[in-house]
Amino acid sequence: MPVFPAPTSRIPPVTGPAIRLAGTARFGTATLFRDAVLELLPGTWTCLLGPSGVGKSTALRLIAGLDTGADFQGDIKALDGSPLTGRVAYMAQSDLLLPWLDLRGNVALGARLRGSPPDWPRIDALIDRLGLAAHARKRPASLSGGQRQRTALARTLMENKAIVLLDEPFSALDARTRADMQDLAAETLAGRTVLMVTHDPGEAARLGARIYLMENNTLTQHPPPAGHPIRAIDDPEMLACQAALLLQLRAAT
Amino acid sequence: MSRRLLVSLLVATLLLLLWQALVTLADLPPFILPGPWRVAKALAQNADLILWHAGVTLVEVVIGLTLGTLLGIATALGLAASPVARQLVRPALILTQALPVFALAPILTLWLGYGIWSKILIAVLIIYFPVTSAFSDGLAATPKGWLDLARTMQARPHHMLWRIRVPAAMPALASGLRLAAVYAPIGAVIGEWVGASQGLGYLMLLANGRAKTDLMFAALAVLALMTLVLYRAVGAGCDRLASRFS
Ligand SMILES: Nc1ncnc2c1ncn2[C@@H]1O[C@H](COP(=O)(O)OP(=O)(O)OP(=O)(O)O)[C@@H](O)[C@H]1O
Ligand SMILES: [Mg+2]
Image (cartoon, rainbow over all chains, first blue to last red; front, side):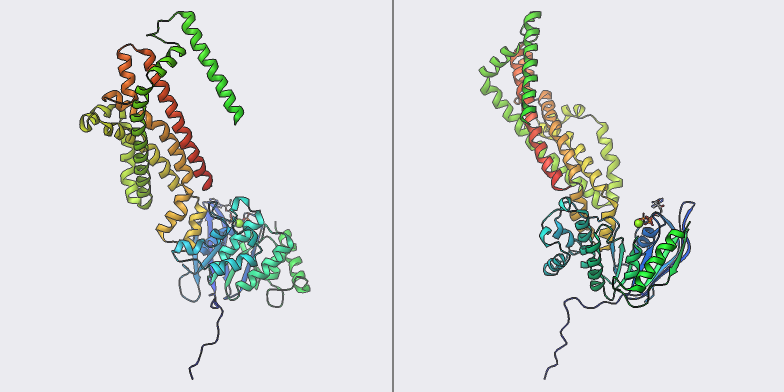
């Protein structure tokens, strides 16, 4: 009797590596962060909070291997020993949609740029799940801010990479859609190593297995709520953590 | 739009009336400045002749515009694909702009003869730079965020060029083409002045030499109209191009 392999889902499970950023970043003489250590645990979400302009996006871009204009001294590496290049999906703070492609074309961009045929059934299914099916043929100029942001999220999820860097991915969404998208992202990115920059303490408390605060040129860890992400919206521990985070953000000088 | 058309018509009529008034009141002889009525009569009497010469000029302009545009696009793409080429060719390209095409016209006519090819080449030379430089600047000015995104997506360089940098540069190319549409007729007419046996430029020179000033003005009017229509047509195409890609 031949042995058939167990049926697998179309997308093979991926486990993201642990990642460690350690060092100091400066813009000219201005120090952005000094002797910071940012550790992403393998296959989990890490959330990065902090006031506007402290350097969160810069840290994310450093990990993505993009030019930041900052002078960084230190070390960024995946702890599994393999290089980061080619394993990272990046969702920038601005949606970066291409105005001449429709929503569908934007979601398919990654495949197109690599010269491989886009996986249209998966793309259309994802667009549908993000609640964008009715707009699939629209160009970005005729989409709302939240629709544009979800399109950018879909494009990032289509990358199917082991490491996913999200810069305020849900900032333009209404409360309900935001909660839905958090669920969807947590499910879709299960097993990936995710770093999410956010301004929303509740979001960090809901999704973070680890939570970092960046303020006054330093990076500190804040204890996450007990229990595994993604946490229930009315989880008391989660709400307590959300409050504690907000208090700490407000206490910062 | 129709309102704008109405205003333009009104202004044109007013100018024609002023022109006629100037000629009548100052009692200018027709070989110095013929009135619009005389010019219109010359146009009607010589319609076949003028249209034939206009056809020649139009062919030169259209071929020149097409070749110059294709050449400019190809050069800009070549420069965009290869940084080495950019460093080598860019200064040379700017140097060629220091040479006025007017100065080259006689030698080009000497080399290529009195036929349409010397005129086409002059038109090509005159529009090559604006097209190349507008498109090339557009290709070099792709928003950094898109390039970063493409890099994290591990885009192949030629896909990055064709799927991001080229479409992003379309509005810039469109503005180069708009300029080219105005310059191309100038190039062709310069060529016809320097040496030709046909074309509106030749006809104007001939009419001028025989003191047929009304015919000269009639040919000039047709040239102006042709340039305007060309500019509008290319402009409409460019508007569509620019809005398709932005
Ligand atoms: N190229 C640059 N040259 C000089 N300074 C820069 C440059 N890019 C960013 N900065 C500065 O670095 C600081 C950090 O920028 P960054 O985008 O990382 O902030 P952020 O924490 O993501 O803020 P926000 O929450 O508003 O997105 C800012 O004060 C910004 O002005
Ligand atoms: Mg930021």
